Length: 316
Image (tube, rainbow, N blue to C red; front, side, top):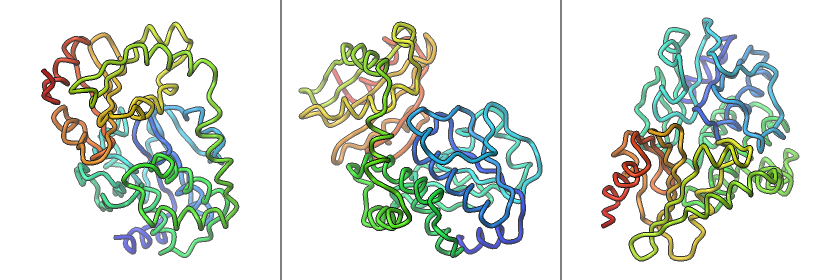
């Protein structure tokens, strides 16, 4: 598969790179690293991300051609869909992507629907960036600083700073190589974890005040509402890492964060420790992800959403 992708890149000129809505560090770092690799090969890459770049990733070397909002319609030699379990995760207008060129689907989620013309799916990979790194090695491209810091950040964030169960030996080996290309781990950690605005912590205080636990304090739930966003002058991007904070409570096996989208729709983020499989729970609601990190969207009032979650977790 990687050889086939390499041949497509070698023959082609114009490429579109996209990733899922509400992009995280892996989606952004993978997309940006691929952009810089293609540009180094004198290609014409363009990135489309429906949502704007979260503030904690603004330190990454930013490509010149990044589109938000509307998909830039054109004909491409290939469309790279990164870190998307389903093509609709790209956002509005996703149906048109297959008309713009062959779709190359690169992902590491076991729930991926293999929607691409070419599908490279490896659930054992720590991140999409790890898979792309193999492609870069196949292509024998130079690991410039712009490529390296994006690859490092993608792996660093998707492994939870090397704390999650998807942290494998390759993750460490690749990141070690990226440091030899000029990446300073302390700098990346500071930008990702220690550069939050004050308002984020005001929001976190309100969220933690909603904390409730179930099943002998092994399952924790917290929620964030639109009213909380208004009171603290924040938005959904400020909630990144909140569910991990809840998971840090001693004895908690599963942490659940409910984020109000509208009064009748909630985005659910789940994290777990050990063998607790939250992907199977999210699958019940049309979502997906990994065993220890998954998400979904549930429609209904907050009472109805909580009741459905409690039923899924068999909470009495």
